[in-house]
Image 1 (cartoon, rainbow, N blue to C red):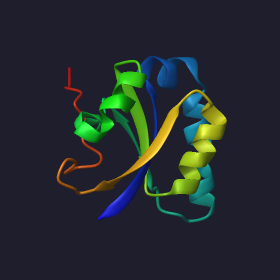
Image 2: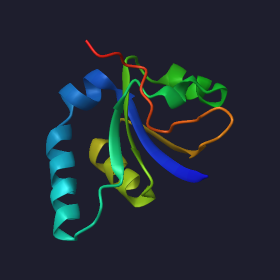
Image 3: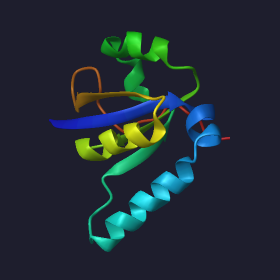
Amino acid sequence: MTTYYYVLASQKFLLEEEPFNEVIEERIRNYKEQNKEIDFWLVKQPAFLEAPEFKEIKAKCPQPSAAVISTNKQLITWLKLRLEYVLTGEFEAPSETISDPLASLETAV
């Protein structure tokens, strides 16, 4: 099993109200300069929130939601400091309730 860390917010807040693109572009540039492999992903309507243990977290976050999921705890801490009004946490996957940590419930239009 792998531990995944996340920053969670409403899609509107994360993708429209915050300078999210600038923050992520800065981090991608930093990773490239260090020849570091990208270890974070943006997931709209993350499926892990459907697991029973996330019922309270999902209730706290306006829907539709979006999450940045990473195996790098320091990155999530850095994002939390940059974005401020977000929820953070962690989970293990694959598990009985979470088979794919990066799965999305969003359907293509």
